[in-house]
Length: 340
Image 1: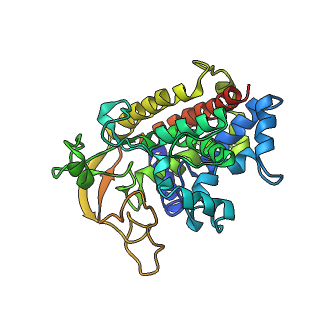
Image 2: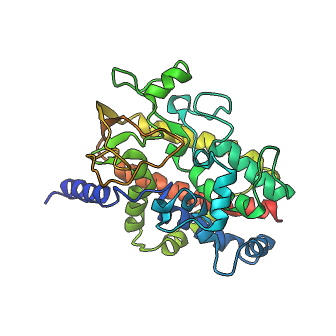
Image 3: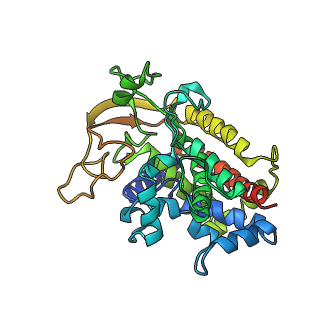
């Protein structure tokens, strides 16, 4: 069989296999980021402070997925702990904390622009870092130190996923556009690619999971720990741009919007159709389907089918590898800046 045909079949299988298992970056991505950071803070004051915040059975790896697990059972296949329940009770908009929906054509994040809001990933990550650095949350937040740490451990990963910051908006002619106002945006929003469907899988979920899996296979790694070892050299070469880690977050968001431009400009939108029910928005509906549980967006009625250009998965997997290394290195830098 021709090599190109084999690659197409491989990626089709990957898309199908992970169709129902997406987290932000997915468990593999977040755990890879955490494993890199663990290596880079080893023996430091930051490592001691992290261990002091965690319970005996917890690690930075488990901390890296805590904020996703707090979203509900379907994310981590476990009931919420009392601590998670308390977090959810005091943070009713916590689903919003993981993303922004900035039009990708802007090529940078604007804190007051379309798709940005006080509870987006940029604002919340800055405030969570501030909470750990100063010892108390900013006005309007009621986070504990542990909750702020869990947010930092997770959201540094999220903000490095391009479609967690940049988003596409589609008009009636199936063209990507910048919405004129918030009202127009509501009917055009693709929710960070969650409503862009490549077969039965959303493009967002492909970036969260499929391209991470492919990158690991390319490196012949089976676990996040194995994968992280090949990324450490790149991650440890990074340096802190200033002494205040809150100031770093905006630059990371700008990088992701610019990368979302590269990720979305080559996507072809071919049709608008009814969404599947429950979590299978890109597939066919089923009476037994798990309910759509994302209060940050109402249950979608429509999705857009897309096609991807030749070589897209390979390029995306390469970018994913780079961004995971950056996220791991920067998580370590933030922890060392908070606890020098």
